[in-house]
Structures are given as C-alpha cells and as structure tokens.
Amino acid sequence: MDLINRTLKHFSPLLLLLCLMLSAAGCTRVVIRSDAPPVLAQDELLRPYKKVGTIEVHRVRYGDKEDLTPADYSWANNALRAEAAKIGADAVILPEVKVEMDTYIFFPKSEITARGTAIKFR
Image (tube, rainbow, N blue to C red; front, side, top):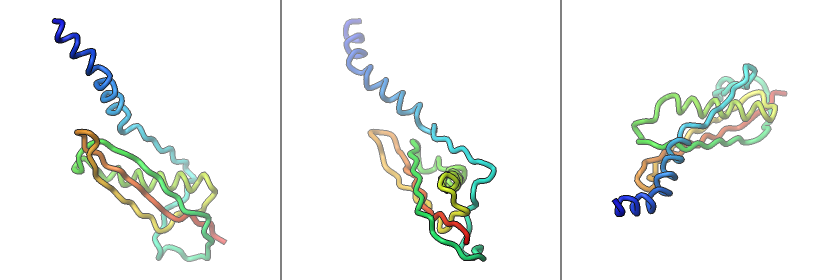
C-alpha cells in the first residue's frame, strides 16, 4: 500500500498534466459572422483590388494523421475568413493550408497552419 501511495505521489503531476493537455485538444473555436469575406480563387477575381495584409492562423490537434477530416481543412478556411473580417477585408485570396505531423511525448500531434492574402476591392 505504501508503494502505491509513493508511486501515485510521484506520477500524479504528470497524470494531471496529461489530462489537461488532452482536454484542451480540439478546443479551438472559430466564430464566423454572416458577413465574413469569401475565400476566392485567382480566376474569380474580376475587379481590381489592393492587398490589405497577409493572414495566418494556427491550430494544434492531438491524434494520428488518419484522424484529420475535411472539417479540419474547412476550419482553416473559416479561420482565414474570420481574421479577414476583423481587419475589414472584402475577400481572401491565395489560401495555403499546411499540415505538419509530429509526436509530443508519446502522442501524435498535427499542426495545421493556414495562410492567405486579405484584399479590399477598389
């Protein structure tokens, strides 16, 4: 019994940290307004525009590469739209979504980074 108590005493901070990390996974939430600017392809640009800035969003997910879903990629586009709305852009062009896989301690993790150019029509 004494051995179990000593073991729990030594590993309880690590267990608590592990539980906190796993509970924080997937907590990223993007709120999209109804008037959020669209993500446009290059051939959809029919009017002149000026570049407002470059937008980048980042998200970390814990889990295997096979756990990535189309919802993760749509999160990236929606997050770009939300950030563009914050700076008053009319659209986002040249979106790039990059996923990097890594392992954190024993847990696989994927880092999703999306970048785009915010524009304003003239």
